[in-house]
Length: 271
View (cartoon, rainbow, N blue to C red):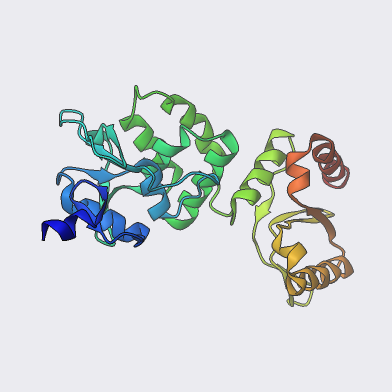
C-alpha cells in the first residue's frame, strides 16, 4: 500500500491521483471539498468560473483554487489554494454540490481586479444569467464596506445592462456611453412594416426617423463561411427596409484611429 501511494501524484494535501491523470475542474473542486474545513466556500475567480461570469484570457480559475473563510478562522494554507478572509460578509449558496460565494458577491470580488470594461462585461453577465438586480449588487457592496476597491464598484453599477450577450458587446456599449452616444436597445427583434421578422441585432437605435443597427462581428464571422453569408443576407434584409447597418470588429475597439472612425460614423447617423 505504501509503495502504491508513493506512485500517486498529490495535487493538494489529502488528494492523490494516478500520475498522468488530469482531474476535471469539477472533480478537483469536489475533491478539495472533502479535505477543506467545512466552513469554507469557493470564491473569487474559482466561483466566477463556476457561475459562468467571464474572466480575462489567461486567468486560470483553479490554479490556484480560491477559497474564502471567515475572518476569525485560521487562514487556509494548502498547496494549490489561495485563501481569502471575510466569508462572514459574503453570502454563499450550494451549486452542483459545491459551496460557493453567491454570483453577486463573487462579482464584487473579481470586478475589483478587472479593467473597467471587463468588470462591466462580467456585471452584464451577472444581470443576464442570474436574475440579479442592480439593487442586489448595491446591497452586497454595502456589506463589503471598507474592503479595498469596493467603492469603485458603485460607479460601475449604473453601467450594467442585462441585454449584452458577450463581453465584446459590453465593451462596445461602454464605448458608446463614454463618447456620449445615445444608448442602444440590446438584442431586440426587428420586424418590417408587415410584421415579418428581419433580425435581432446586437445594437438598435430607433426613434423618429432614425433606424440604425450595429453588429459586433467576432472571428467566427471571418472563419465560418456560413456565418459570414448569414451576416451578409441579414444586412441586405435590413438595408432593404431602410435600416442603416454599422459593422464593427475587434479593430474598432482596440485601435484608436478605427475607434474614432466608428464613433464619427455613429454620430453622423444618430445625432
